[in-house]
Each structure stands twice: as C-alpha cells, then as structure tokens.
Image 1 (tube, rainbow, N blue to C red):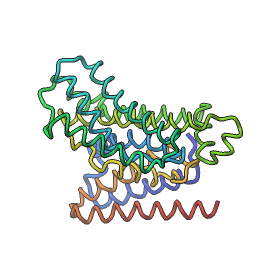
Image 2 (cartoon, helix red, strand yellow):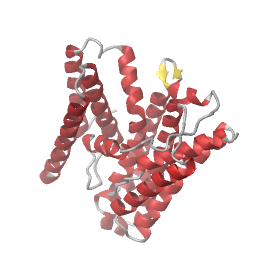
Image 3 (cartoon, rainbow, N blue to C red):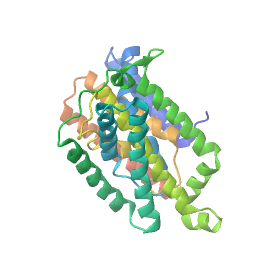
Image 4 (tube, one colour):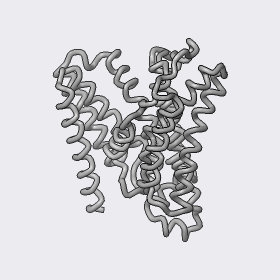
Length: 308
C-alpha cells in the first residue's frame, strides 16, 4: 500500500511518537501494551471510518456518539428479551442504518445543513436511549455476548480484528470502486459532479447510511466490552472521531482524505493517550495536550488548503 504525502507525514509522526514513548517508558513497546492500544482505539477507529465517508462528501455527522449508545441499547435489550444473537446484532445495526438514512435524506432532499440535522439527531438518539432504559443499564445478558468484545482471535482482540477488516474494506471501496471515485468527486466539487452525470444526492446519502451503520457496529462492540447496554455510552465520542479524521489529513471541506490517514490519525491520538497514562501524566493535562494536537492538525489542514 503506497503512502501519499500527508499519509507519509502522519505515519512518520506515529513512528516518532512511538520511539519517544518507548525511550520514556519501558512498558510502552511491549506486545501486551500495543495490543491494548489497538483495543482502546478500535471503537473510535471503526466509527471514524464512517465519519471519513461523510466528511469526504462535504458533510459532518455529530450524532455518531448517540447512535453508539442507542444501537448498544437496542442490541442488549433484544438479548435480554430472549432474542438470538443474529437478530439482536442485525437489529442494532439497523438502528444505525436508519439513523444515517434519515440524516442523509434530510440533508440531500430538504437541503438542511448537516451540522443542524445531526446535532438534532444527537439529542434525539441520546434522549431515546435514556427513555428506553429509564436511565438504567441493561444487564442480564447471555454469557457469550461479552466474548465478542473481550475474546481474542490468534492472540489479537476481536474488536481490533474487526477494526482491521473495516479499514481494509473501506480502503478498497474508496480507492478501487466507482462509488469511491464518485464520493471524492462529489466532495471536491458537487456541481461539477452533478454536471458529469453523478447522482450526487444518492452518493451523499449513502455516506451517511454507512456512517450510521459503522457507528452502530462500534456501539455493539462497546456494549459487548462492557457486557451491558449503557445509555451514556459514546458520550462525546463524536469529538474524538472527528479529531481522528482531521488529524489523519481528511479535509473538512470534503473531497480530500483517506481511511488510511484516518487509521493513522486514530493511532496517533491513541498512542499519545496511552503514553501519557504510562508516564502518569495528570488527566487534566492530558486533555490539554490532546486538544493542542487536534488544534495543530486543523491549522495544518487549513495551511494545506491555502497552498492548493
């Protein structure tokens, strides 16, 4: 897989970050810690893939954190009610797909700003999660459900394996399919794409649908890791997801970026947080450091846009 300019720069930053942290902490560069980093980053990374699609189309989705919660609630409620795993998981993912379809439909058909639409849905889905559960976690789940988020496959955590499969599939879809090329075209210049015969509304709507589905997948994995459905799951996750996408070099203006960059951006932030924890840095200071990194990434993104 060939790295482009921005991707190579982020990969170098991740490498340097790892070298510095391995020198500062003997616990960093160990197999178990690196697997832990991948596990901690997996949920954010999976949701960030969907956010990459939406931002590439020129939009934004602020509802992903709430979709994570309500999809987890839907899945665990179905399991607690005696339904099978397949029915529960398909139902949970369907919640995300419906949310994405609803958001994409309003954005494309009614021409409402994505920020407003998804901000409203963020509140609706979060409130619905609390209404369904009456503010209480969903417990009494089948014993096997926890293995989805806690088991290992060939020594690798299952959520990390799912993360890898999602990224590979998304990379192929963006770089080697007609849909991917059209998504870049629509995000880069919607009017030119329309004049070229591309069904721009359909392409944009599909990005939101996929984003909702991947957020739901992340919510199911998170619920499995916690072995419960939590109405406050994914709280503020949308900020971490957007940060990972932007740090990965995807332009907030749309039309430029990659899921490989998103993966590297996610790992850059995850490794930074892991290293700060190993170094026993105050949690409040950690917020300042991570926030500064995100701000720097946004500023660099604006500088790149001015140059082009």
